[in-house]
Image (cartoon, rainbow, N blue to C red; front, top):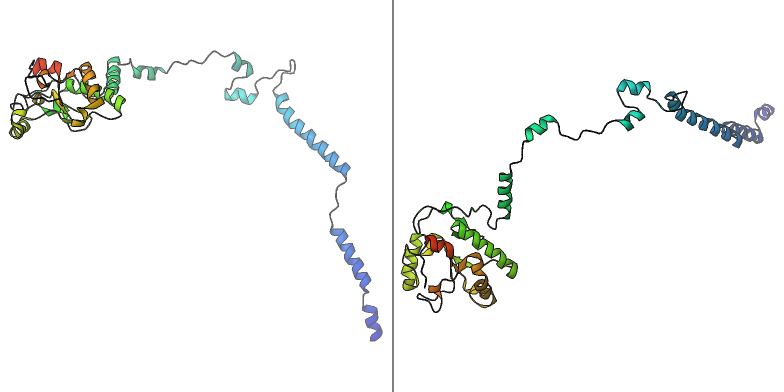
Amino acid sequence: MGSQRAVAQVPPESRRARREAELRSRKPSRPLPGRWLARGGVLAALAGITVVLPLTQGADPGTGSLVATAQAAEAGLPNTVEALTSRPVDTAPPASIAASTGPVDRSSFAASRSFERSPLPGCDGTTRPSGANGQLATEDLCTLWDGSMQLRADAASSMAEMNLAFRAKFGRDLCITDAYRTLSEQRVLKRQKGGMAAVPGRSNHGWGLAIDLCSTDTRGEVFDWIKENGAVYGWENPAWALSSGSGPFEPWHWEYTRGVQEDGEYYSS
């Protein structure tokens, strides 16, 4: 038995040699540099054929110039010569669009531009309100920049222009305490101030043609500017309200002169 085991046992050296042989058989062999060069040449040749074939298929054998292929002809596409020599593109709009556009309404355009430039957008300076003193149709009056006080349209427009100039100079709006007054408001004011207030129904506030300035705007540089520029916009501190006038001294009271002379209560002194 002992001799048989000795014969069956494989020496370690033989096993190692067999293992190394197996590893060598599994290891991929690297291509030689020469083989890589040959393969690269084949690939380059194939790429050249790929580029050249489409061009030569569409070339004129006699002149070598490119012509439209069958596919381009079937699709209705222009060839190179047709594309370069075709007539200019017509830039006129289609007839359907031209017919629907029509001529420009210049009057509407001008009205729109006037609205944009207006110092008081939405205020038509030609509108004249119906009604008596202190009982005017307020929907026919124009609201000033503060969003509450109102004046007759022409007076409001000119005052808004003056305010724009004032704002450019001082960086703020004119400060106004009163504008249009209803008849009931005139009566209340008369009871409170007596001789300092106009007879109800005779005030130019009731026509929407007068404003009262805040006391802050009746002195210093601000008041000097208002006195110097008020007449430019049609506004004045009336003669009767001056310190030498026939009425109470009211430097804050300013009237739209043209409107007062035409439709209001005008006092020359």
